[in-house]
Length: 221
Image 1 (cartoon, helix red, strand yellow):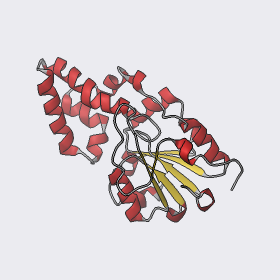
Image 2 (tube, helix red, strand yellow):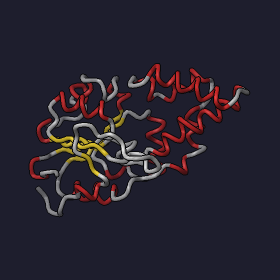
Image 3 (cartoon, one colour):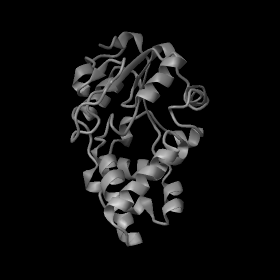
């Protein structure tokens, strides 16, 4: 599926790709509505409907991913609320072995995420994955989300890579399509970002069930 000898850089998404998306889905669709209902003293169904409408308004923008934005809008400390369910944060199978194997072959491994820095920090503290990357890049520092076609040129200002020699693994079709338009050399989607949900539609992209599917063999390139 992947010709490792043709690649120099591996860009990896976090939520749904390296980490189980169940945490995020549970937080935004279950825990957040429940806590919002408690805060407002309104029925859970009303709270969920209101929040879903608010989510839709800013979907695929930096505000959607910004915990500070949601804290201001909802009048609640969203980062603290995430800590209430942090026990659900989990690494997908074979991720650590994959990261170690890729770096052992001499490829540069970069985490590129839309997640807000407070969420990123919580997840890195919980999973201890940070030391497995050559660099960690947050889209909030770039100024636009990965779905934006201009993201990848902006990324080049902080992380130089040859697009034709780069693999991106991501669970978002809009992100993969923006990278495809940019000319990324290799693209892979993820069949089951949320282990508690059915397979997702991976569109026109090849996809993996786990990182065992693309584990490189040992030796430097």
